Image (cartoon, rainbow over all chains, first blue to last red; front, side, top):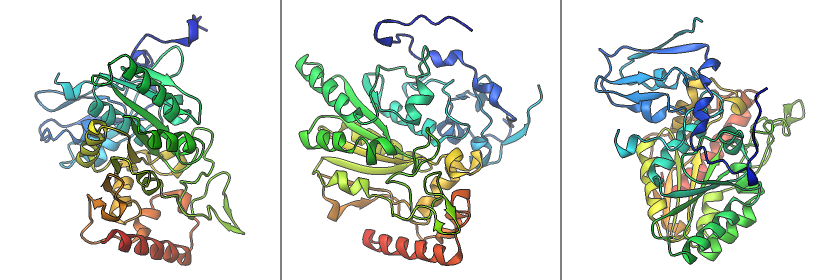
Length: 89
Length: 292
């Protein structure tokens, strides 16, 4: 158990600190993008509930530390550039 | 990184995989911008985003009790006015459907009536999801929940959904809108408009819940799209509480049968053909009122 220091009024000044918790460990399926097919519409970027997709010059890039493997991006991709594959640890 | 790409709702929040709320809150906070103070009442959003000592929020957030997200936001807004800072800072109150339709309703009604410059966002997943899928007044007819279980003598929830958008608009507030995550540009536009509106505005956002509705996590967007295409959930906006002349923003050319929406979720899995016909008839009647 890690010790947690409780501040007065439980005020938390550590904005965005949930990033310390890597939700990628929940995943059973992993998204893979084919950048040859990607048309940079960024629908996946908008729809991702976890903000685990980053825009790049070539298209997109996954932040697998946070991707929970829900598969929304693969289902909504209009050009089928994303596939879900079994996660192997 | 451009302004629009800056995340104000951080990754690492504990929402279930495929949760529609994550998508909705990310986009609404982007529309609000960093100069925003938010309040959130008890509900999924609070539970998943504020696990002490961590927080997913990049903007100041006050956690209220179950019933008073709107009251706390009212206090924040008045304080900002007194300090002369209201022009620079936006106030957004978040609530789930339980905290808006049921428990927080009197606080919300008071906030709308007093005319505070606040945007109230209701994230509607149609039951008390964070406590284990209990029915509430936003649960639709025929849905099986843990407190309205379907069985030999019951078809599940027996009451229709409360028309919260129309009720809020009836307070004669400047802006009321309904939105859902599948229609992203519509959601962004309405969120922006609601936040820029002077005075109270109400945004009702329909967000599918894979855990409570019993559907696959990758179906979240598809189901919110089907809800609009079948006429189950109507996307509209109304200005100055004029609900007789509301503007339906997305009109499906040809409505799909409700069965296509119902069969995607196991909470409706028990419905017989008769039940589906009844739901279809109710939806037909509703859509006629909206004029499509």
